[in-house]
Image 1: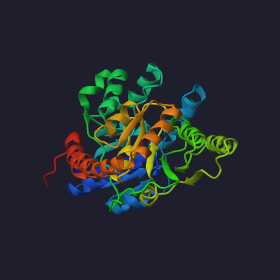
Image 2: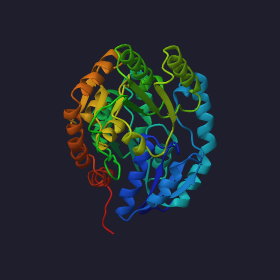
Image 3: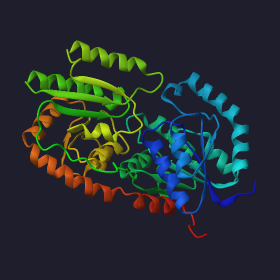
Image 4: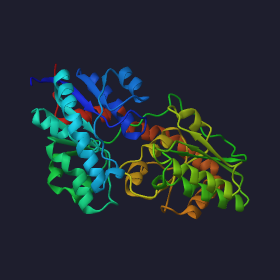
Amino acid sequence: MPADPRTVLICNPGADLYGSDRMVVESVRALVEGDFTVFVTVPGPGPLIDLLTGAGATVLEQPTPIIRRSLLSPGGLLQLARETLSAWGPSWQLLKYTNAGTVLVNTITPPLWPLLGKLARRRVVCHVHEAESTVSPLLRRALYLPLSFADRIVINSQFTRHVLGESASWLTDRARVVYNTVSGPSQVVLARADLTAPIRLLYVGRLSQRKGPQVAVEAVRQLRERGRDVQLDLLGAVFPGNEAYEEGLREQVAEAGLADAVRFLGFRPAIWDTVAEADIVVIPALVDESFGNTAVEASLAGRPLIVSEIAGLKEASEAATSRIFVPPADATAIADAVEAIADDWTSYAEKASTDAVLLADRFSFRQYADGLIDAMGLDTGV
């Protein structure tokens, strides 16, 4: 098939608005600014599509097999193989239609596209956002195996690069770290000067066991026991098929007598008004994350941050001065951190205001756009 070196096809595993999905929008912006024609394929409808179109991409819906934990079993792998065979022909036709010279695969979860791009003799680039350090070495190696077809690998953090090196050391020479760009609010609403009751805590992210909102709920229970008037907002929703987790979380809230202190806000495509109403952002993740967009967003919004002391989150928030690291799964440490910030509120609020400026530069769009195009090995000359 002929290929246009100035056309890029981005393959994204979904059309939601979580971390790696939002980063696709920034990738489109970077490529369009570099005068590339950009197509994006997603497996179905979703709120991401309007953002991609607005950034200058042509969006094409095409079902594709996606690696999920539920498929990591003999029966699941057989289903994945059937989905791959079913998607092969339409995906080949889509690649032919776009005439793209470069295939950019976002995340390691769409296993078909690296192979398809390689067989079509396209430049294949994979943007890795995952750092699955807690799964078995054999499974990690299997997850990273499709990257063998990539010419270049873009990595979102040094921690992700480290995990890749442990799992598939032969791939590290192709990998370059490009930190995410993280957009802040159009205008920073400074933290309130007087921390009157209630102290407003905010959790932002998917509702899942590994993200740890249940730990934040327990911290609220302990704080109320200590006589602290606190309120926790949970901004996010479960992924399809994990509804039982939310039911369990609501039961935890009810059993602890926290119905008046914990609010389930659901998913909201725009978060800044909600963050502006909060005093402290809590990120209580239990397991390693490749990078902490939410941690950066809290700092960009000028809010003190309590964050689990795990590799990817530490790397994202190490430059912030208004953050407190806590051990994962330690609700008491979160409660202690809330009290420490509340008791020294003026100092933490001032630090958070400084962090908003500092991190805006560190994770700017410019550093991301230049780094991405360079890491992909693309020529920006027209």
